[in-house]
Image (cartoon, rainbow, N blue to C red; front, side):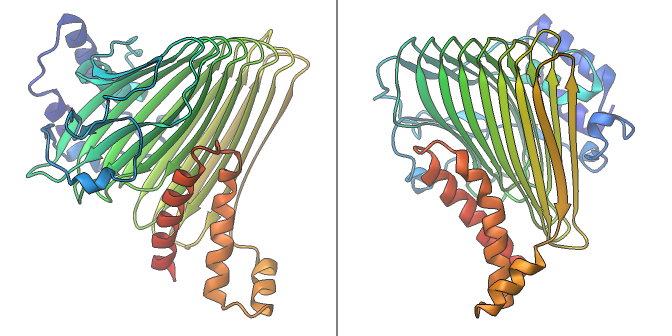
Amino acid sequence: MSALLESLAQGFDGDAARRAMLDAVLREGLPKPRSEAWKYTALRALERRTFAPAQGAPIEPGLLATMDGPRIVFVNGMFDAQASKLDALPAGVCLQAGVVDGEAPAAHADLVFAGLNAALSRTGVMLQVAAGARIDAPLHLVFVGAPTGADQAWHLRHALEVGQHAEVCVVEHHLAAGAHAHLGTVSMSVDLARGAQLAHLRVQDESAGATLFVRTDAKLAEDARYRRLDLELGGAMTRHEFGCRLLGTNAVVQADGALLGAGRRHVDTRLDIDHVAGDTRCDLTWRGLAADRSRVVLHGGIRIRAGADGSAASLSSKNLLLSDQAEIDAQPVLEIHADEVQAAHGAAVGGLDPTALFYLRSRGLPADEGRKLLTRAFVRDVLSGVDARLRPIAEGALDRALATALERTA
């Protein structure tokens, strides 16, 4: 057993079912280098590290000052009632911390962190929106990593349920209150009923030393609409697995994202979109940027099952290399088992357009400023589809992270 798994299993106090899940994880161990799902994300350095169980920590109130409206806050994996604002929730909304049980993942090394999360999580966010409710102001789900005397680990499990023809807007923040090197696993289930609409912005801007493994599983019923934007801006090693099942006709998912690599950061995202019903649609637009000695990985998987006729799917993955020592791995995968479908995917990795840079220089712009302008425009392409209520938050977070990254490369 690796030092990592041994440290995470210490102090386990769950029931027999969770004990069985944990034992299965320990038997399987961490993914091996030959695993296709992990071939671009090596765990050799991580498996030698140890983490203590999470403990809460104080944070400065000013850290959350820009988050107007209802919010639920966790610090180092612990619910922080004092920092949360849950006393003025809109009608039709239930937002609280609690134990979220879910289906245990299959015992397989590729799913080791999902298995650990299922066995070890003790709390998380429970959000329920009543049928027909319309919530205009964003609800904030906030997860803060704060410095402590030792590296800690926490495991959070969330459930978001949106009732029939309800509409809600959610911002999921992962941020740091200071330098730390903690590890977190997060599992989120998203369930959209018939005609429900969810606009979801996820901003991951963790500490430069943090490790984060996130898994999101979404289910969309007939006529449901799910629009999400993922901004991966921080952390040392981060991996997000996003799975979405389009179960009802006319269900639509639009999932966009920006992967920002800088320093020695490792950013890994895996998409698994499953068209189960006919006349469903997915639109996926992702932009990656790798500077310094970072590594950016995107696996874009789309499956159209037999019988899902009339479905439409598109994936655009464009990536920008800003350093000879950086690396980008883009892997689009399209699997079609139905007739009468429209599907397209593409991936590209390259540098800045020299013609565009020459044009900017010919207009009097210095070369460094021209490169920054083109890079910023390239990444901001993902903001074109974001919900208008979330755009200011997304723009602010992305621009701040880009400014820092580009300053390092100047």
